[in-house]
Length: 117
Length: 114
Image (tube, rainbow over all chains, first blue to last red):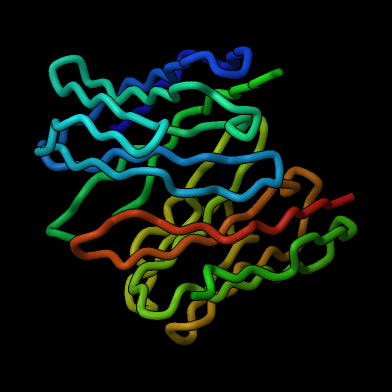
């Protein structure tokens, strides 16, 4: 069975601080995808990034960066110079891949990030 | 481009009533997913379709829940009869499926059963 653990329930930072959201996953599959989604107070789920199990390159997009380490089954998310608009719940998710097709997402419980002035 | 469209955005109903949630996926996406979000259980998959065919409905709570996808641009999730424990936010998501597997979510329907 697949499992995603986000041990940090809630994090509070002051604007301009860097913050890292942790994600640890469990799967028996050799091929899988990892995702991060953002859920702002308005409630929608916004796709941020996808990573496949064969690509361990770190990725940077503006103030966002992701560190994928297969050896520790982790896919951590760092926000540099946080802003109030980053306040949201962030979900890490895992997708199995069956015969080259998409499948369901298994979500972590989410980390609520509060950025204050 | 229009994203995933869900209606209604909010639904308040009394226990025992039938509730129908609607979803229009992104055009060209072959996969459609229904999720439910509650405080107690988080985000959980209910059912998903590939090319209008249900693939996995193991997450559907019980026989009171049913989902259909009569064509590539429309899906419904029906609860009959509804119960207070069905109160949740129901999300529909769609995905291209092959080569790119990310799912794009609709705004959700907040269901309250009194």
